[in-house]
Length: 174
View (cartoon, rainbow, N blue to C red):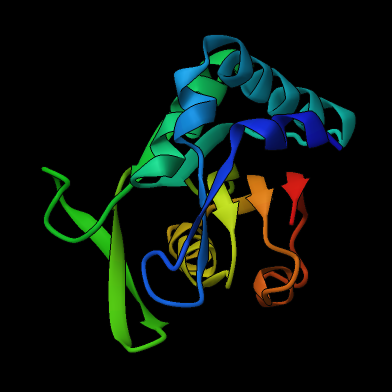
């Protein structure tokens, strides 16, 4: 699906470390038509698979680019999920494992209402660690994850397995 959008994604070899082929979305963002089409295609994907959500959440930083535009397009409110110390009100947090060490994310304690269906959006699904932490944070707050939607999925990495049991969709596959 949407293989022509791949023309706007460049691979940067050995970034951020040797052996990684980084998928750089900057050319897609720079082209107004490609970016608009990506947002419309993600919105259409949500409609095609009948995702019913009350609100949309996404992690910083590149997730915000797609999440905010998509929330506006779908008529949903937007919940930012951020690194520690970036949100001005009381927060809840989840710590998660990285390849070397741990990290954590936070969300305002009043961002998700009990039983609210949350569409979780990010630019890329790779190992699934950040998205899984977002899922845990939403569920800790009493929300239900309606679906996880991505612009890009690296199918050779275990992201989908880490999110097993959740409705996962992506536009572009590598």
